[in-house]
Length: 271
Ligand code: KIV
Image 1 (cartoon, rainbow, N blue to C red):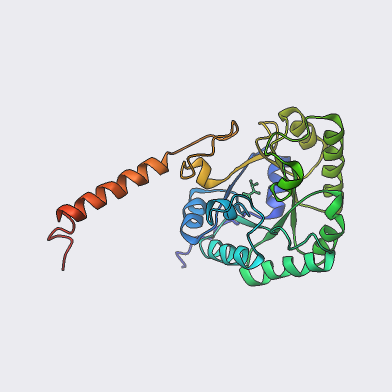
Image 2 (cartoon, rainbow, N blue to C red):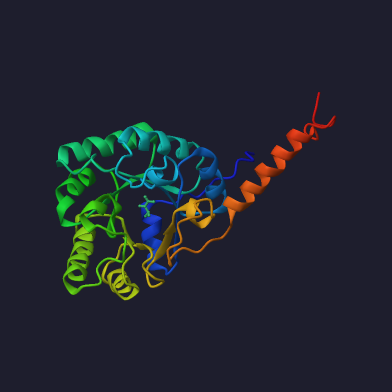
């Protein structure tokens, strides 16, 4: 008899079932093998290899500089640490906006070279042609509306989106369009909670919010923010579960002290 325990993997279909059954979806970002292992083992439903890696891993001011090759490196590292979670990878800025052929090529590279399960793309009607081509190739797509950081230079600021009627109406239409095209889920970032709740009610696909209130079908946060590694970022929607910036800093200080004093390594820590 095998002692190997079968792991029930999260799929795009199980997320839709979760919405039907009123079970909230948990999603966090991951960019490397070790973090992915911890989050997956803890039971996270979805791991997003977000282009926020551009900020938190590479130290860029925006998500724009990260390349498709960079995303492929991060995603393949994450995949090696995952047994259960669904892994979704952001198509980075510049890898899908020019035309649908390029978008499809980028999505195929991600799926082929990383083993990830789906891609995420920012935008609604503007990118519909690309979404259709990618879906037609059998690649699941997660949409992303509201604050879309790849368009930060168009918006000018990271403030709450869709507070005015015109933008709210476009967002509602885009959400319906993404569902109709065949996206399996949708991220709504930094929009009024009332609007996000209405969108989540209007579609059958799961709506995962970040700064979009509690009336949606799941929540996503950037792991480095919720762990307090990235300590300067303090938006209202962020709940901090640890203060790793301070804890890790204290651990490093203790290590330096032990090395300098000769306390480390002890005889027990030597061969
Ligand atoms: O890149 C990212 O981390 C994201 C989340 C904020 C949804 O897109």
